[in-house]
Image (cartoon, rainbow over all chains, first blue to last red; front, side, top):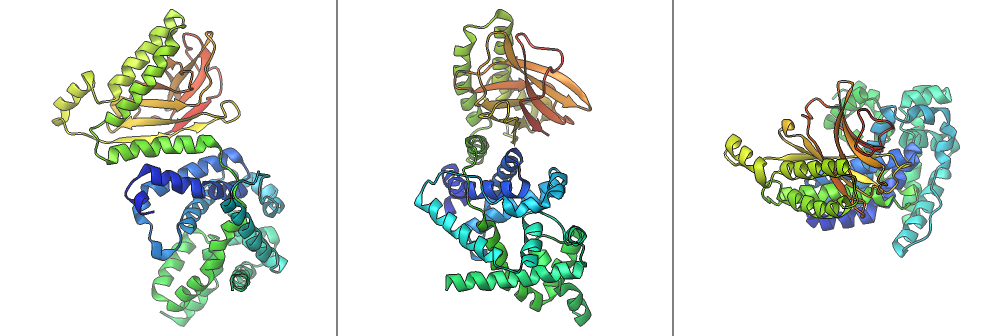
Length: 178
Length: 254
């Protein structure tokens, strides 16, 4: 990362090779369209390249930083309504779009698929109503008031389920890691 | 900080972490965070759960064109950042492309070859490292360099799945711009690629151009790009057209 911050394109290419697949997959899962996902990934990585000096190692891993930027870009795209109407009409599909079939490649990828399965298991083991609000917010890009309207429940209930669900997810992941 | 204010904001912790607050609510919550150590601690406590969410998605291979277009922009910006003389990196890039183009001009119809020659000439001029442009530049600003901006292109993947491109804009928009492409299919002798500029609802014809056997090419946007909304490429009959006859296969939003 030090070399990336110094503006080394080869180091940036390595960073892309390491995190590009996860980034594209996240964007694709959120917007459900490969072309839009590609645009989002490209915008995100250009933003990462141009703001590389701002990365602070003490605030989290490179992967978390990269995926956070991709997530924000995808949320922006969703809220610009590029694809939200389509998503709104099929919100029930959000949790099903986990991955496109893909050939297995490297040990690193295999480890990441395993990690993905662990996190997904933890998420799916939450009470269903908590999983639902978390997925609609994080992957669907919906605001709390939109979710309240969709699920026909008070906003306070939605916010409460988000917080409770995150707390349980944190504990569940910590238990697996321990 | 009042207790009431804390109680009114603490329920937003989960929604904030999940980006589910509105912009106004987000700003208010972040202001509250500055003065509330309890909510800050709660954010820190729950953040690992949110950071884990993107990891629930299994990686998939991104399209190769994504890396190609991304690295084209990154490499160019890195060259500029290294302080190479203005346009030198780009000019070198253009020379490489022109070498590829010259081969593809051999079998062209005279009109198209002339048009491509114009593109080549203009591209060389706009590249800024040499020739007429350098003299003009020196007289305008004492020979100091200047920046340029690179904007990645959006590609119609259903028509040209392997293509990528970027537009290099001079700081002085009157100097026009150069559109660089990779991975475009070569066309037969009856067709050509053509560049268009969209400004205030009007679509203005720019140069026809072709790509080399490696799918690479470059074309000049000779009109002032200031206030333009987009630069686009379509496939047209050899010699070019007065108006686009199809949806753009590649476009750059400005």
